[in-house]
Length: 118
Image: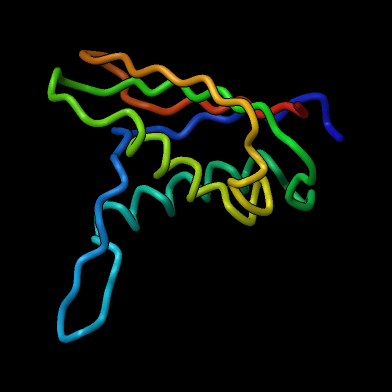
């Protein structure tokens, strides 16, 4: 395995929002889907032609948000983790160690992701 994978997702980190139901069908809200797609593209650029990682993983996520409006840290993490599924790792259930922090009022909103073998 590569010693570590590190990438940055530019833009305002968005929390994972609850699925919505319309006409009996559940769907992911557009803002959540767009942010998970942005995470996926940043991850793909970093991973290149490598397959998703296997085994237990140690993950660090630093989230820098513009403004001071609070968001649940666990929902911010979930959006990043789901965006990496099938790209950086096969499934986020592989994460056995996680460190995360959020910084508010940053002028350059972004998410920084570091992944290592556990």
